[in-house]
Length: 160
View (cartoon, helix red, strand yellow):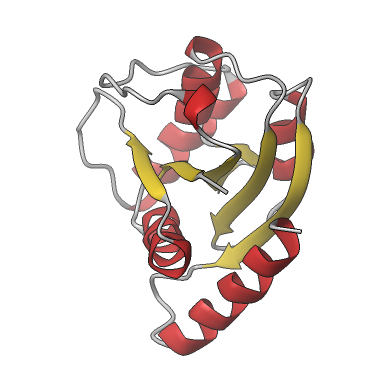
């Protein structure tokens, strides 16, 4: 099964998951990047992120060329922002129509997944969902064996 992992990562957590999936199943990986490269830290990061989500901001993205139709399975990943996918995901899905695909979803978070998967699925009508999984700050957890195991077990369930 030809698989693409498409993700947005703000602090490296979703990127780590994407690279771990790639290593496990030799998938193609595509990173969604926004044009705004300003570094935000501390409370400014949280305020900026919440405003982005609450105002339904769709940030401008750097070009990303991926032929969705070339893949049997799409694994989409996002950090959780105010209980929702990151705004970059909204921008990507607004520009990239995905229908009739088998999709698996993952998120990374520092406190909880909220309703991220409900909101994610609502952005992708007309698709079949193979599974979803969340990760608590995977880049901060130094136990890569545990991350590999969790991802490996999840990949087994979504490839059936």
